Length: 577
Image (cartoon, rainbow, N blue to C red; front, side, top):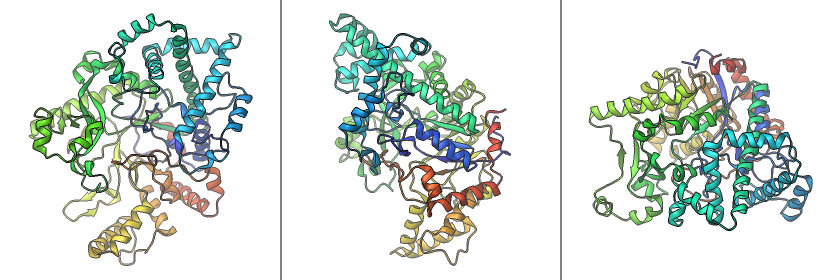
């Protein structure tokens, strides 16, 4: 086990897109990430965790990547010294043609941001090609050779997406383009093949720039003694370059998701049927036959940019809730009964695959198979720490012992951990040491909003039950359960921080919103639209530190970190040496 649970650490989770800096062009970028590393170093924070940075599809969700290894271009910093071929005149032209206030808006305007950065990258690429070949050109050639296994098919896929006006739904393309071999034959027959090959080279260039920039981020983190924790989603988009290029690795007849959760009253489909993410299932027999090369490539590509990583929805490796229809058909099934849906789907209904956990022999088989796959991931990079997001409506009893046996940390969210007989929150001291402890992930409401909801419950029609819940929380935090605050206060914020820092968990991570005690939310499961994955921080991190309201909260956090001995000096042990 590489994680030393006696070397306790603290971290902060910040989505890259949410960060700000002067001149950021409307979205957080790699320069913002370097400033976030500096923020961590100044405040004794050993781990900077972020969401996936892989290239997104049209919904901008970092968990619906168009490629498992390509990086999101909108997160690139558009400065001449960081984008070979980019000239100051290019930036000046764009500044004159766009609204000057767009980069200070509360939400990311993805169409504007992406269009702007594509124009700059294309101008830079043309200038780069026109330059006299030198070391940078040689480095670009080496990059293409080193990453050819995925880059060749990715660049072809992206070129065909361009030909279809940005539509990556390869199942809608003409039949000859739905396979790599067919696409290569098509390409060879095109009269404008030279232009198409140049477009392929452009997409390779963008990824070369991205890999260079993120390598610089990682080097900056190394110099600052801050560990970077990335995120590997369990699935990949059905309409990704990976699925298109390696269709034998996937089962496209099912769509992975999550079971129904009645709490999502605002989303009737999720309440009735569950979350249909649309991700294809894996054909694990084929992965095994090919020695899990696709997964190994994914892990190693992640570690080009990060030191450690989180696996999102680790439950999927053991069994995944699956729909016999794609999300585009959700509304068709919303009004149907189970019998009607089953008839429409040829006798199939949403269910856990490869099998449910009942009876017990099924659970044992699921546990063995899932643990075997995770062992491959662990052994691919044995010096890397892995944190498994083991949360969900139904978490099998075998899951946490299985990941802990592999030396993989699980999650501990105190306000989710209960003693079933009494409904009391499990005492902080009883949380498992091999855990990432946090109050909220990107999918959860911040603690300020959580407590505000409890107070409303307490003073609502169901006041007695709300009062009991508030009392339980006070006992969890070591506060007076007879005199809870009527609103989220500075003292309550301090109690939340102190309690988590003093837990036995190896790593205590705070969402940036919980560190700052704000109510911003980056995503809400079951919902979609412009507000998801688009919320930005109000200021850059150094401005928060200097602010009369937020500065004291940051210093309070730093003091609690120091008092609990979660020092950055321990970060060197994260990789086992």
